[in-house]
Length: 346
Image (spheres, rainbow, N blue to C red):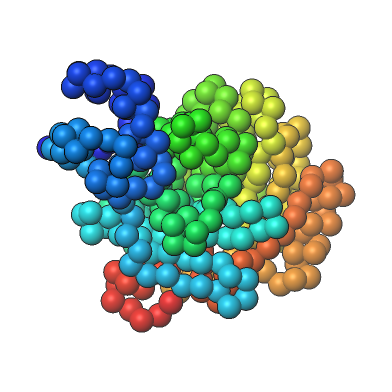
């Protein structure tokens, strides 16, 4: 069975090449080719044909094929539906900002977490993505648009900390000097709150930005919308978050989906501010996406304004996330669902 060569660290590749009787510099050459986005060994023009044939027998190169692409007429946000060799599909979103391009990638096919406002969770869980499949999403977007991506957000389909080992491998590969060389400070990882993994991530001191999907100020509301809260409640989660910010000196971004009549009252804002006191943090308010079957509606502008006012009065910084790609349902999960369910709605 061929091995996944693009998921290997450079030092692992050197060990494999040494076993083949090849010098270390050959491994470095192949490593650089893999991270430049080549789709086959034949594209590695400075590698001998004999070595390329040997590599073909032992390894495969993972790629992400574009199944569908939607382009926003408002802001040029691009939403991709990618497929892999086994036919599984994931979504990724490419966003353009004044500072460059940001790719929001998926880490799993589907998701186990079951958050009630999320389109991905409604389709169930298939499998984890490999590190190479995460890299391939970025490489495919770069090739399709002839650009270099400077920032990465792990906030697409799936829960990154539920695929911990593959995600950590991806982070180290994508930030490696001979790889895509995207620094950790340009990477954000979003989690719904798998507490033990937050402690583990903190101790690794990777210097990435941790985004925590909080979405509620108390256990009563959060357990109703996010099943993970029944295992790790808000007190446990925020204790882990404080440990993360204290250990890394990195500010945590708390994601808060504003749902009309559910979690957007001034009382909710006051309770949230009290809970976040003492944590190096920022609150990112997100008007909830309208997803078929959830029954949720985004909060009214006046409710959001009052919510922010309460937070700021308590010394908590908060902003409302800029909505990109609203005309193409740029939140992940909806495009894949429309294809896999056989629906024409997008």
